[in-house]
Length: 236
Image (cartoon, one colour):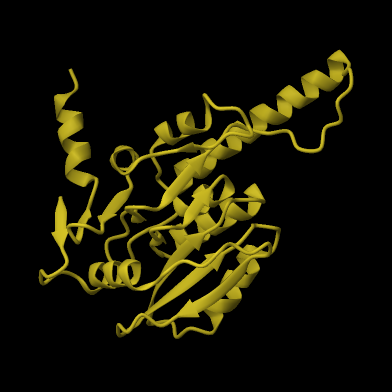
């Protein structure tokens, strides 16, 4: 389903489109920054989460939320190369539980741990998932990486422990995707690449993973709902 900008649609849709076309992303910073952005629409506040996830992002975001009137809508705008997976998951769960939609602007990147936060996006009105990727934005995934391991020979026990930790990480990822009602097919995006390589998906592929796409050329917000229903009906 496509939503034209000029149509008489919900305030939230207008807000998301306005935000994506008005704001220009700035270069990433080493430390995370959470700040409010005025987008000129009533009853709505956009919070930009920009930079590397280093360990206290959920506290910073909740601190910013605490300064906003409870009746106002909130949109989380993400611009991060990733970082601490635990913080990415925590942000995603909070976005989902608090019904906060997520958006990645054109020219911005949401990769690695940032995708855990992105998939937590949810509509404040319907409660349905609402994660928006503007055309020209980048959403990237990669395989599990064991960081900080020295290059040496490992014992059988050590290798078994590493294997167990990897399995636990995959299981935790699965639980997170289930909590935020994300398609479990998202897990395959983290496979098939080396840990140091990034798998960026296209706009068309994003729709297959329950992600809405803002087409900046046509000015339409393309929702994945009808595409998913049609695909389901076509299956034998």
